[in-house]
Image (cartoon, rainbow, N blue to C red; front, side):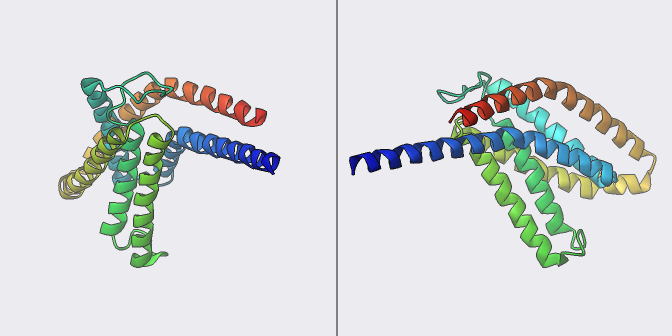
Length: 221
C-alpha cells in the first residue's frame, strides 16, 4: 500500500513537472508568436489603421522599457532573469495588443461581418481573457511578482485605449485631409519595426536557449 502511494506521488510529481515545463514553454514563446502574428497581419492588411496600431505597440514597448529602467525594481527570488522587473514587458505588450484588438472589435460594428456584432463582442472578450491569462503566466512561472504584472497590464491597456482614441479622433481625420501624410506614418513604422527587430535579437537568442533547456529537461523526465 505504501509502495502504491509512493508510486502515485512520483507520478504526480512527473506530471506536475511536465505541466510546469509546458506552461513555461508557452510563456517563453508567447512574445515571439504574438509579434510574428502582428507583423503577418500587417503584411496581409497594410492599412493606415493597422500601421497606427502596430506603431503604438512599439511605442508602448519602449515606454515600458524606459519605466523599467527608471523604477529598477528587482524580480522575485529565483527568477532566471537578472534585469529589472517592474513593469513586466510581456504583460505590457500582451495587454496592449489584446485590449487594442478587443476595443477595435467593439467599436467597429462591421469589423468582421462574418461574425456579426455579437460574435465580435465574444471574440473581444476572449482576447482580453487570453491576454490576462498569458500575463498571469509571468507570475506562475516565477519571472515577475503580481504587482509587476498588474502595473505592466495597466500600462499596456491604458496605452491601447489612448492610442486608439487618438487614432480615431485625430490621426484618421488628418490622413483623410492630407493623404500624403500616410508616407510619414509608413516611415515611422519602418523605423519602429527596425528598432524592435534590433532590440529583439538578444531576446530571441535567449528564448532559443531556454526552450532547448526545457526540451532536454522534459526528455530526461
